[in-house]
Image (cartoon, rainbow, N blue to C red; front, side):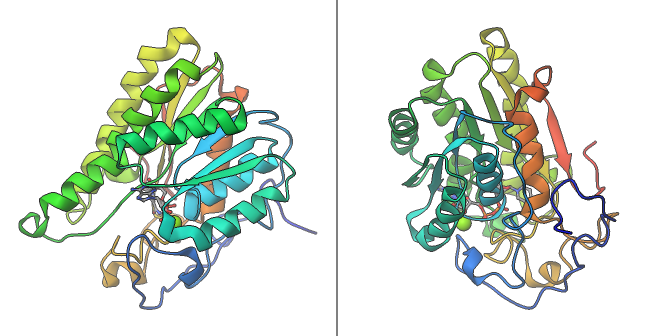
Amino acid sequence: MKKNQHTMQDPTTQYPVMDIPRQSQAEPGLDAELHPKADHGQHSYEGTERLKGRRALITGADSGIGRAVAIAFAREGADVMLNYLPEEAEDAEQTIRICQESGGKVVSCAGDISSEQFCQELVGRTKDELGGVDIIVNNAGKQVYVESIEDLSTEQLEKTFKTNIFSMFWIVKAALPHLPKGASIINTASIQAYQPSPGLLDYASTKAAIVAFTHGFAKQVASRGIRVNAVAPGPVWTPLQPSHGQPQEKLQKFGQDTPLGRAGQPAEVAPVFVFLASQESSYITGEVIGVTGGNHLP
Ligand code: NAD
Ligand code: MG
């Protein structure tokens, strides 16, 4: 029997415990060069029209969690705008092709969200090409491991903050006048917001800021009928990790220190985004949902 996201399974064996072979990619990493391969739900996710007719903007949608969210949203009946960096065109083409199989509208826009001007352009194109915007998934992120603050350059610090948190301000500010009542904004935080690794100071700080932004912005726009939530993943196997997101020795046993004993796959994170995007979560706003394999949020 073909398994889908509803099939009952043992979560400890649903995906293998991976001993990750040595590998390193330039930033941003490519899914095409990831070993072993990640699971984005391409062969399992079945939609049930939970997002029928919604128009969704997803940043960093070429690979990893963003690709899994794009596939799930398209299969739930949404039209999608996929953003990614120009150097990730190969991964993006794959995501676009899979999403197109669902029959909805799939448009894309390559560009760097660490620029306010590009964030405004991205929102404008989403509105023009999809006819509006109902869902925003702020997913793109930068994570570069640096052991000591003495080696953390101001250039990296600024780029990480601009990409991970400034972009959220710029994108939602540009989109707000166009968001209808019932719209949903979903930010991607991390367990790092609560349990920061010593070598991810800049990244973890942005993730904590994303949590505060989510709580506060949810209160600001609640009366306008707009909900704002965040998803906080634990270790998930994506190109972010072998492209200097982790040191080699941590990469090898990536995710094995979770209670479930393995890393998560992008396919296991996407259903939470679907839930938060859909009307099923109508009374949930300002919330952060962990997908951590058991190393819970405090
Ligand atoms: P990923 O590398 O597949 O996705 C990140 C994407 O961010 C890239 O594909 C790239 O398109 C995009 N990006 C980076 N800088 C950008 C920029 N300046 N402009 C536009 N796009 C840019 O990795 P992922 O793990 O799927 O990451 C998605 C989100 O999940 C990130 O916010 C990350 O911090 C978060 N997260 C991941 C993990 C994990 O273990 N993988 C854990 C917690 C949180
Ligand atoms: Mg990518």
